[in-house]
Image 1 (cartoon, rainbow, N blue to C red):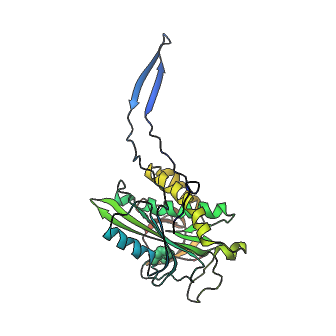
Image 2: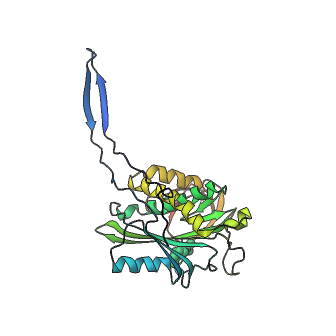
Image 3: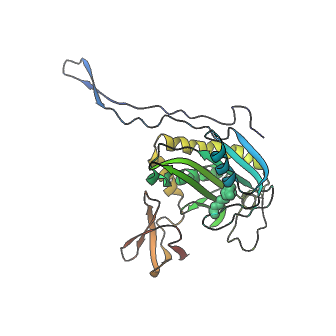
Length: 292
Ligand code: BTN
């Protein structure tokens, strides 16, 4: 199934900027001096959702996207949506469970080949902030639990799994897998702290309509990324970051201590300042929140 009609998606054009300084000399004749030529960022803009491949059932939309990329030329912005996944992938070795037809399960294919691999966490921040923007538009306040879980009232409503391939130290293909609990209200007992949009608003939603609403928010963040507006993405990410500057108890390899999250490094590592004044950096699964 495909969306048609250009009203659904908006392409954001990026205007290149030259820094020109206009000087007025004593004779009031205007002189123009070229101050500097800034590195023109990538001029590429992205439209997300064309084409949209809608599958009734698949092992995993991320795996389907990877197979597509392997087999044929796929255009950037392609979205693979599934009603149900038989082997949905979560972070690490986790599986992503979702009842059939109730939730949003999809992957987006991007080709951010201008991006140095060491900046890939910006992509993750862009996706997480795009989902937050969308939820806010629905009237829902959400937060990002580092690195990229989306929380409503400290319960997980959405998960993101980004799988990148790297070529010559730059990103090559990115498969951005997103699972959002939309209408599901009852979850298996082994899913820790699940939330859903319906659980928050009490309303049922058409999943395809939710996708149609969400994609422009993601597209906006991708275009920000492609114009290398990293500051905008990071500041929004920090704004939404759960526990930022909040005193809390953390547990790492060395034990349990009090501290607060103060930043996220460009590498994607979480930066925590202990109450003793020590700065500690963490990768995935290296630190746990243990209470307030
Ligand atoms: C997480 O563990 O938080 C990440 C979950 C990502 C799940 C989504 S659902 C759509 C896409 N396809 C997958 O197999 N996984 C992602």
